[in-house]
Amino acid sequence: MAPETSTDALVAAGVRTYVPNYAPKPVVFDHGEGSRLWDIDGREYIDLGTGISVNSFGHRHPDLVAAVTAQAGRLLHVSNLYYVESTVRLAQELVDSTFAERVFFCNSGAEANEAAIKIVRKRASEADRGPEEREIITFEGSFHGRTLATVTATAQPKYQEGFEPLPGGFTYCPFNDPEAIEAAISDRTCAVMLEPVQGEGGVTPARQGFLRHVQDLCRRHDALLVLDEIQSGMGRSGKFFAHEWERGIEPDVVTMAKALAGGLPMGAVLVGARAADALSAGTHGSTFGGNPVAAAAARVAVGLAGSSDLLANVVRQGDAFRMFLNRIDSELGLFADVRGRGLLIGAELGEAYAGKAGALVDACADEGVIVLVAGPSVLRLLPPLNISDEDVSEATQRMERAFRAFAAS
Ligand SMILES: *Cc1c(COP(=O)(O)O)cnc(C)c1O
Image (cartoon, rainbow, N blue to C red; front, side, top):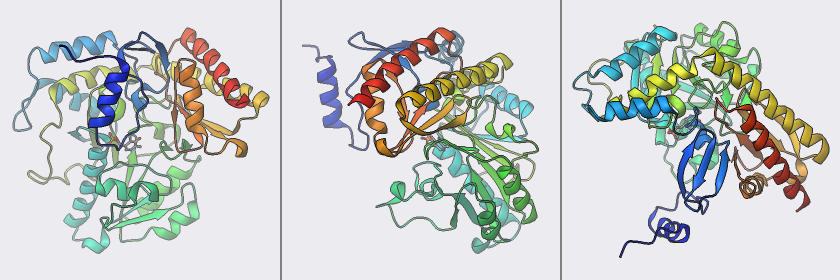
């Protein structure tokens, strides 16, 4: 007898067999197309979560499907003991189109940040700086990943509790506070690492001038500027990298993942001149890093993310969503703040609804819209970057019904 494939049966099997570190909704997805998703019961949703900013070009994008299919028909994997064309081409394209002189490929955001941490420390060690002089400064409210080093870089106790002892060498500063970073940085600092828009921590953009200030301090102390663009990059903000919104920013290291391969697992560390040669042969590696199928997808995704039409759509639709949120707020009084950049959008619930972002997500799902939270009190939207006017209009109508039901309950 074939195993039962009903939603109830699959959810029950997942609840019984997965390590309980996630708390998934009792929904089983079957397929998608553009901004839409369908579950196995045939229910349709508009996807404003994009698998946490991974499916940034929509589901089943024909160019992504074609590239993945073609590469899968030739080779799935070769390892980094050899070259393969799709990976070499991707590296070339990233180097040609960004500040980077070299690229390291891995499989996730945490791995990209982990590699960045190793790169900045190795560079300091090459300059005869001892372990005490390889301190890395990160910011309160940040999110850099779940491995032990990246969860330590993540300056939020809720992600760290119970996993002590944590690796040393990290110092935390309040975000967007120019005096605090000035006081914290010293010649013992080997790098400052930050998100141009804090994502998981509540969708908080760096204030105009803050990145520049951090960069100036880094240069003064021979520390590297590491930007975590895992969520904010790949066109999400309306520019290829969110740091391009501020003039004169020249990072030393930028980490990427999430949308990089449009839905397949891939991370990358882009390194500029100061750090390009820090990792000599044998000092770091990843068996799957630069996987040819992921690289084939990433070549398509990077091309899409760099197109001026797409970036213009991000700015326009981002404004449309923010206008909608502000309009509905002026009537229902749900939010204390609506913020973000491009299609990385956060709406912080007001005092009366503090801690209720999860309930708002459920109300939206009931109306057929998938949205996310960023912490207990911030609603987060990460729509597809190529979302159409029709889908924005339909999504905002559905959200309006959901917000009214939420406010009434
Ligand atoms: C998601 C995220 C990470 C971690 O990426 P994983 O692929 O989950 O390891 C790191 N930094 C930022 C800014 C992120 O949004």
